[in-house]
Length: 367
Image 1 (cartoon, rainbow, N blue to C red):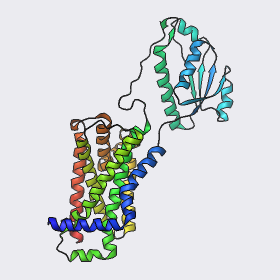
Image 2 (image 1 turned 180 degrees about the vertical axis):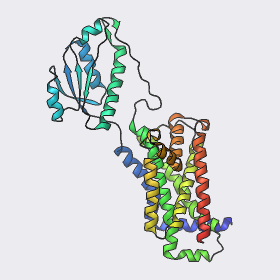
Image 3 (image 1 turned 180 degrees about the horizontal axis):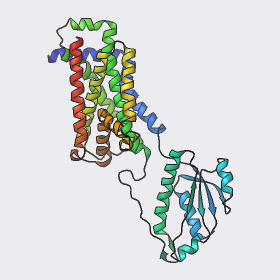
Image 4 (image 1 turned 60 degrees about the horizontal axis):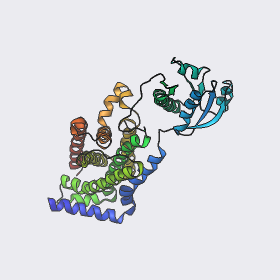
């Protein structure tokens, strides 16, 4: 049995060596896509056009305005004392945000009285406005506790502390999801096409005439893609660490464990699709449809699962990337052990076992 499986695996590897485009698709394309999307996708908002309306013209007001400029997210485009200019600046798009320092701001601080800053924001782009508003809150919260006036400490506010991603960098959040997203698509599509190709070329009839059993055919077909998938996953994770600065806080053993489960489940799903599709075109479309959209929309990659309707939250339990992504972030970002993410590992294991059983049954039926 082992010799027949090995012979089938060697046959598949020889085919991959001749088909260089497929080999590049499996090995090189995941890393290329990771770099491309890693740089292209970002929730960070930079070079925000900021107007400063300083009606107080005191040292305290200038310090408050400079705090926005020092953070690196804002570019000063206008400075004035008259707030009526804001209508024109926002209408023409010259300014996207404005800080308005009211009269008496410095005196209020010197007297220890409560005061405020007004932050005006263009809300036409709701996503951008939400992010910029978060920047403004962090800046105000960070400068107020350390603002001394005449030797006295001004009004004290809580200072936020962000763990695991202190700079709230988008790549740190997005790259683990990109790894799951890219690996799922490449593994599912590659395996689906590999089996369907035998049908289209008529070689499946020759395989039926051999002593190969269905399970041996399944293992011989998937083992090469499993090895390639693990190499591609390692390449993506190394690129994420070297290029985007994604930390590797946890155990490589646990990281390998969850990656093995995820790739095995994805390959099993690809084999299942190949038993349903009769052509490579149909297999390709089914592979993309059942892997790309669910893994992007329902895995927590971009949209938080907790904010979804109840019905969609139930459906997300059928998406393997949900479990892999949660475990991956716990391992690489937090260094957490299996006691934290064992439920995600269990969900991934159940999905992998169920899919492999169905894929094997369908393969036996088709042969």
